[in-house]
Length: 168
Image 1 (cartoon, rainbow, N blue to C red):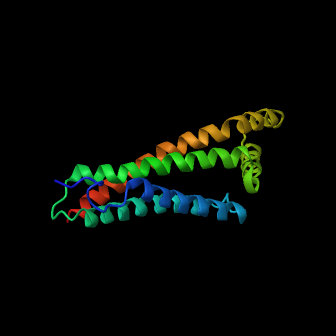
Image 2: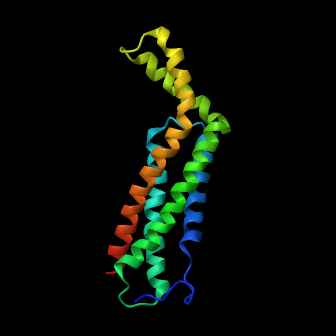
Image 3: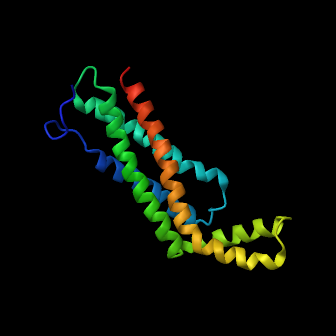
């Protein structure tokens, strides 16, 4: 059985989660500053950072625990705690950055939505302003919720992989 984090010198998952979230938020700031929000290939980078961050977090946990054969559940739980913190922090960051229009993120999102609506054959041109108003009112909360779900799923996968690979 793995010793509890309070009796061993194990870095808590909250610290690891804060580090992963900070890296993702700094990356998103750089992308927004460079006005690359529309660059679809950069959208996968935060997910990769999360997956690798949780995987490394679990491997570090296993090494710090000092156990020859740590329990799968303890490893998974450690990684998922970090994931939950990352998902919460990044989602709050997304809602704040869109609401406060940091680096023009809301403006860029509205421009992208407008282009998409204009290219659609299903929407009449006179309906576009109404659609854009609805988009502006709902993009921050829906983006935050969407990111919580996606980050939790990817974090669960990272925790699972970390627990499986770390035991070998």
